Amino acid sequence: MDYNLPNSTPQERMVAGLIHWRQGAGNAIRAADLADALDIPERQIRNIVRDLRTKHYLPIGSTPSKPAGYFWAVTKEEILEFTERWRVFGLKQLYMVHRLRRQALPDFIDQLKLDLQKIDHEIDAVGSPNPTARRALK
Image (tube, rainbow, N blue to C red; front, side, top):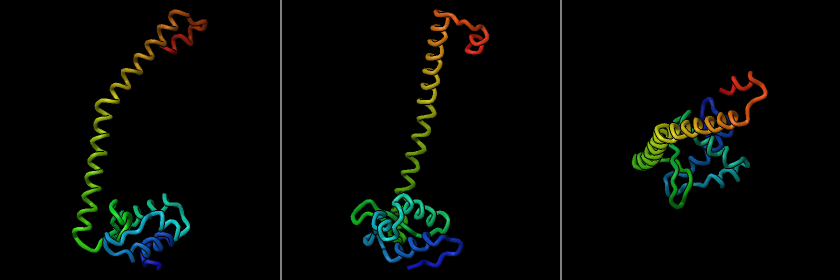
């Protein structure tokens, strides 16, 4: 089935059409099955589903529980459950970015400074035959 979507690609319409037949979380279809049916890579299926959600605002949910996969959300509860999982995932990602910038980045910069100091000491011990190159390193 080819779903009617203005300003969409043929593949987007085909994926939307196949998922539209999977009404409700209990009828989910795996990305691998969609990929096999359309003879396109699974990664491309995931990208198309992302675009169908973000560019065309289609109510395509996904569930990790059996049957795992994509489905056409038909109830308010399905949409809320799906979006809550993504909201929590997003918050965890933002927290990770915060922690990396707050802790790991300064640690990395400190380590880099130590590495550069070690190199500087090694140059001092060996000496540089080229004074211009030595100034450039400092």
